[in-house]
Image (cartoon, rainbow, N blue to C red; front, top):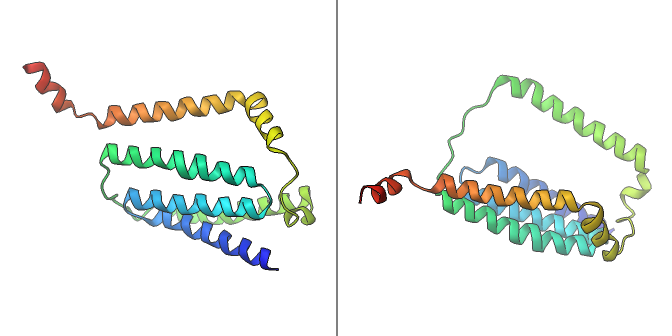
Length: 172
């Protein structure tokens, strides 16, 4: 029973962090909210018995990826965002669409996996098996992701460079 209460508590914390991520006006506060989401997910993985995935979640996502996000935010010197009221089309179709999609996903999960697997914990798998899948079967998506992150960093550097500084160097 305690296991379920802790699971639901960190699930609620994860959802609250995700909502906070969306409503923040300053990008650094959004990045910190994303760290809360990543940490909560790591605890969820621990509770499900997936210690390796929890460690990877903390080291890779909450550590390395968030450092990159903060680095890019600082490099771009991003200030406070301007929010608009949104569109009526998004309210008319977005909220019912999210509700229908959530019910559909929940129904598919319960029908395909059976309700007993939802609370039984993670499926068995050794870190060796996960490593084999990651670096053999899924090597191409892994490398493509790393190249996309590199391109994003290079794009941030190009966007952050001031054209006026380059003009001053050419005139001298």
